[in-house]
Length: 465
Image (cartoon, rainbow, N blue to C red; front, side, top):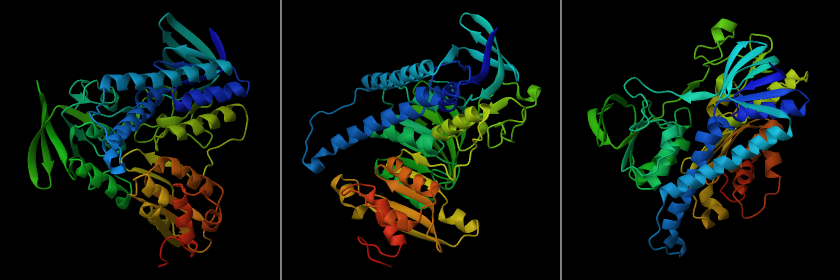
């Protein structure tokens, strides 16, 4: 029997970060992972998708090179070679995590874990069964893609994001069921490679829950490249054949039939809790099956903690990592807690969308007197010089104090720009603080400064309204 202070089940962004921090704090730590270190994020999700997004964006920019006076002849994408490059990126990151675990004295066990009790974990490895006796357990088992009745994944015609990110051949056509961020990111990859795309979304807009004016640019670009967007629509049935699938779809204009070589079902994710024995151990969950915890990641059972996707929305890797640190420090007796003011998010569509903090609507619903200001990338030198003048930065602030409440960005490098806004909110900064901070020129972050100057009542590069 192996002895441990902490057993972390799941080696994704929440689990491996938790294990490393626990090791740093002198806790004897065992990390159990059944697949690859880094979890779904590194092996099948965040990293593979961003690798393909970066490559296909470069391909599209190269094809548009004539705009900048750069001409290419015969440019093409070798998808198998691109997939090999992506796999190399994943492998490099996994090796890095293994090295970090070893350097922090974290024992990594590859196998299927079963949580027997708060102090015992059974693991099935390639060598046989193993029992680990522990003082604490951290559940970091993540989430899995949800399918729909009649649209179950088969890995050949009906795909989850995992299979869609591993294609070796560019499909002629793809039906994307679900207009959320995962579906649209993958849709953008293959659309740039020449795939004819149709998106079926049940609600009245793409990216449900995201402010409509942020989504508008994304939908316009998808349609500009030939995508067919069906809102308030639903796939009623699917019939598979040798050439792909035929779908019967309910739309506001009536029923329609459409064919596609591949079908990507991307309607959300649910908690992965097999092997945790939630009900047997008395671990409380919410109505959707996510494990309930307090601000220190403690579950209803003493000695058992939960972090990351299995704990609930928002399902974000960076949030999981922060929760992992909190759990490790709480186990070590520190007073750490999830006390961050906001969680930034980013969607890697074209253009990118990102946000942090409150929207104008959520701030008003909370009873705040708000002010909003925005600055367009079309008025920013660096954006125009890069040929990416679409989009804007919006700052939502308290009308009285000027304190920054939220920021939303749609446009070039939105995913990189949002961190400045997250820091501002965490520090309780005002729009004056941002406006008075010198930003280098010409750069994209100047758009945040310009929006802040507008909020402070002294815009320079736009007319004062």
